[in-house]
Length: 520
Image 1 (cartoon, one colour):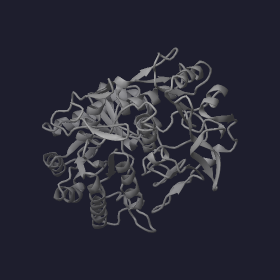
Image 2 (cartoon, one colour):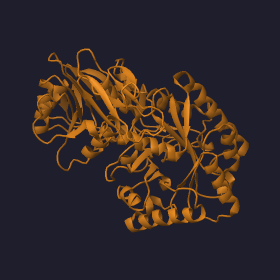
Image 3 (cartoon, rainbow, N blue to C red):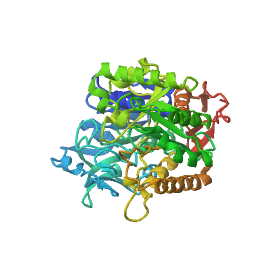
Image 4 (cartoon, rainbow, N blue to C red):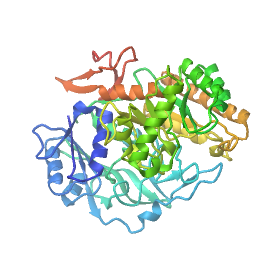
């Protein structure tokens, strides 16, 4: 059991709690409001101040593993092995990032640089900017969110190490300016990890470092808590691909034929307020018949869903009704948020409209839905789930220098290294806009090359399981229905939605275990 503690009204708390559940399952995550229960060995504290700092000290004294997030008071800083200092005045400049040019990327001056430490090796990135863009000021194809100069999603405070090991630093201009992640192993048998951000790493695959800390770090002399991997056991990568059909659905056919020839399922998210003819509906039926999926993409594709709950609910209801009317034999179960923008009032409205989940997450919009692991989100109840897919394969994002696909390959490599579900997208052509592609031939060549890379890279790790977007979110939902527990030194996994799906994978004490081994 892992405790999570935060002050009433701290907005970072529910975000962190949901992130923990997405990895460790709801059966192992417990909100702690008072003193530490006797024997508690795992604790996460958001902004440890006062009583929360004392709570952390109790678990440290019991020889547990403690993760501290955000701002520290003097006692919590001592537990972390650091000395707290004021946050430097120029951190906003560290996190600033210019708009990306066509065929290029931009990045902030400030970056996170990982040290040479075994725990740092759990991060799929040796370094990452606080903010980067691949397309104007909208997309980061490497998938992680922005680390702001301050605030809930930003740096929490200045500090210097005083006994702690540096795992990662905020580096500006080649100089380490302050610790970002520290680790303090204490003689009493406890370990304290501190991340200098209230939400920690919840919006990046660097979250794998948190999983590794609780599940794998020092298994011989520290307690370890199992977590559930995203990719099932024996599978190197789970990959989904889709097109967001804002215009001209039928123009997706050449790309669909490429994917069908490879035996790879294809998904289409459809904006319904567009002229549609039988050729469009025929393609949608073929996509479904070939193992693909059809999703809603709203009616009008409004910016931020019109910034109005009433408009958002009507968009969700009407788009689904239109698709079901024209495609009566294809279930419309999931939504792709327009522009990947999802104001926090939207997820419960989508559930109310009959959707089972949504795909969103983009660095320029609400950070709440950039998820390191897919699953539940604050504000919407299970079985409603979400998955973030912030990798947009467009012609204007191909690099002009070096390997044009280098960023996409890095994005997939990070997902493969952390057993994460990897999703990417493109758009159909239209008479108005070709998304930076010179022509269809160039696009087909790029997609084929990327598929080749994915399959070759994943082969040594067990190969690729290509899924449509419904299957992707079903796998996410299946994980969220699971229960993990440790009983008498053995891991127990309950997997009620397993069906005939592949066995899930559990990570514990440095080993990856099959659900079959665990009797699930």
